[in-house]
Image (cartoon, rainbow, N blue to C red; front, side, top):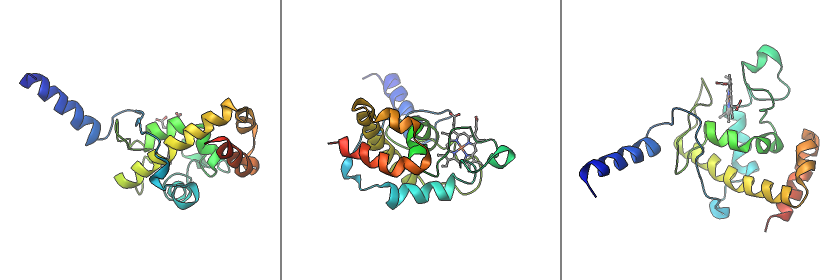
Length: 159
Ligand code: HEC
């Protein structure tokens, strides 16, 4: 490999792996069901610590501090509905480190962002399997109260 090319690859690697992505970028995290990262064990607290002071369906108008509508993270369903956006704005993985969210206050560590990416990767697969199996419409229409049941339906169709 020519030195210039090597330099370019190194640069690409550095920007992908060490410095935050300047814009929302998919982390390309592969699903690893053995990661041990669960909603109850990790993601719920992550969202409560870093996200739901703005992204909560109970917050309206100025109380959202500009947080995008339909991006509410106090339930699993709320996260799953926009799992790709959450990955692109706040998670870390092989292709990017996304630190755009939260915009202020306490920030998650790289380890926490990586765990979020792992959980999202598998949840996204479960969600897709659920839609393929016809549970998807239910997932899309359900209000927050139904999501625990529907999420377990989604997991039930996952292998
Ligand atoms: C201080 C309030 C605040 C907090 C805390 C916060 N956000 Fe945001 N969020 C915003 C604002 C404001 C925007 C709109 C930013 C923009 O459009 O540039 C936004 C946008 C987003 C978007 C993009 C939505 C779209 O329109 O595509 C995602 C995804 C997101 N936030 C996820 C998160 C996650 C995950 C966390 C926790 C790690 C978080 N946010 C914490 C205020 C917040």
